[in-house]
Image (cartoon, rainbow, N blue to C red; front, top):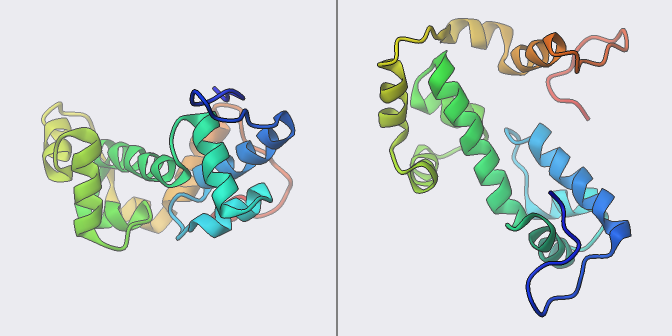
Length: 165
């Protein structure tokens, strides 16, 4: 929930900046698998990088890059629970280029390694989506189909693109 207050002693975030911060956060949510840097996300909010970091942290309680990391790990958890993919495949699908960095961050945020997490969920006996299907069909289209089933899809008559703008 966005807040305009913030840390004690800090200046409040101007209300007119909130929609811009929300737009930048939405971009991170949609494009988490792409290489996103701070400058690109701050540009979406139409403010400088330093001002963006300060305001984003005041409003959402964490820095933009921590938010993006958490979002990527949450998506990785979802894939590890539901898809028959290797940890390396999941790592690449959620926007990491280094398996070591991914595993380190995953353990830092969840308290267990990606392999241990996947194996723990595999013991529950839940069916997995075959990895070949995900690669053939595409993770993005699968997400879009799930949103469409919930009534959140936008049908403009255009062919679906891998990432919404």
